[in-house]
Image 1 (cartoon, rainbow, N blue to C red):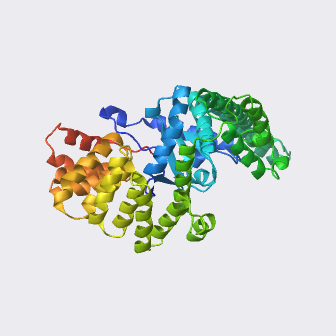
Image 2 (cartoon, rainbow, N blue to C red; image 1 turned 90 degrees about the vertical axis):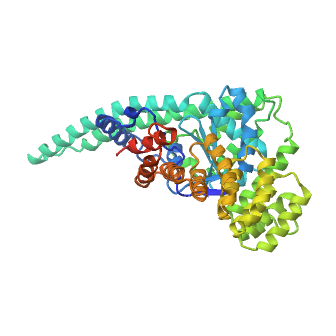
Length: 484
């Protein structure tokens, strides 16, 4: 499991080969600023905002091959039932202990690790994915932007009317007349717009619940997990709901949602269908891993005491030993896990990661190769393998590193870590042009545009004009980041 603290927002800019579109007009920026101002006024005081959570700079994106594969296996049948393109839809893990999930930018589902820590069954996570897929299939984010655009017109109009009222008040006070309705003139239109927008969001949430049950029925799965999730929310808000104005919530009150969902889900022929044993076993392992990586030693020990001899508990304790730097103990426990399941790619991955971070890059290569072979879709494993190759400082591994990391960047052209290690591999080989270009691409992806331009300029000078490398470097040089 790896964290990406340098780039908490995965919505990186994309380079356009046609240079003319890389620059935006000043009027576009002015419109953007106006939209942000209007949006801020409309939504002021809102306590529940899913997109805002996706943009929080305190949140860290986490990459883990095992968890990502499980999420894909959970999501694929749901995406198919919803008619959503699985290849174009990503599930992104967020290092946040809050129980939450949300959709951003249309085809990105963000799931907090806290959700995985607390969800005891696969159906709980599958239900959440089904709900968020309902937002995607329903085009809710697109329509929400249209609603917001319409709302901004009324908000700006309200601002202008309010500003006129303030001017009138100031003039009245100059002649000794008090006009106490000025702030009401400003806040009234914005409050009405905000309530209208939040009402629209609540309708979307109920529509997503209904869609989720539909997808679960179509795939022969129980909606009980989604119901369990909403009941958790209800318990958390049990002592809050009486004091909250329902119109100030972006989601319906839990009691409303549960009542509506119960009616839909209990009609499902799959409602009492038991959990899939194979998925439950994988879910238990992922949950144990996440708890051990995110929690501290005391929490891991409390959740998985020595008396618990299950595979998941042993996995959690092995991760805890690795995190605490107890290398011999960690390797002994990991080897015991591998002996139990020799074809479990992620046990081999953990061994490779433990050795790599202990400064034994050469010893890490073999278990990481094994893990990559057993989990061919595990991009984070291949990135770690490329890291191990270059960390040996052995030039004979340069071609191996370039091969594995180039494949990663072709599959994920926004993987900054892969470009960073690819740059090091080219450096080991003595290919300065590609080393600087890869460095520039990695820096660009984490938003370090000045440093990226410096490396791209150096790389461009060494490539033949109009060659692929020259054009990639030129794209970076031509890019201009938006200004607020």
